[in-house]
Image (cartoon, rainbow, N blue to C red):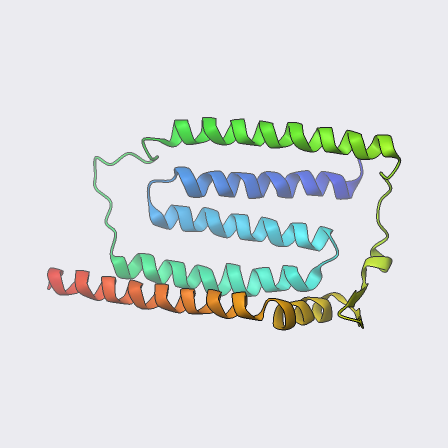
Length: 186
């Protein structure tokens, strides 16, 4: 087993544990921390794929900015823990069982497709140097960050702006809900 493959499996396990932790934790703060763990694992996977720009964006934007927004939202909504409240969600067992079944199904499908590709003889690994230069819209784009920026602001501009509006609306809604809760407490 190569070090890169070992690191891939470690990071994949970190992402999987983080995702499961988001779903099964009862407290929103704990779920947010597991989401942060998952974000860091995905950033590590981006580094393994030689997408350093995406890894940096993953850390700066998601693990930094979005997590701060989530934590502010959780704090503004003012969620309190009850003494008799269980640590895990009551449906955590069912969620884990369902997730394991979906994971097994996807693994079975991926192994089947990998065997088909290997049987056709196209199982060679791609050269990262060849992947660094991309042709987009007739223009030769060199480098990871330039290709991402070109695609984001040319082809996916409208979805990018819609996502930013959704985030703004969610943040305003969290502030309004938090303010309403604080007014009831006072």
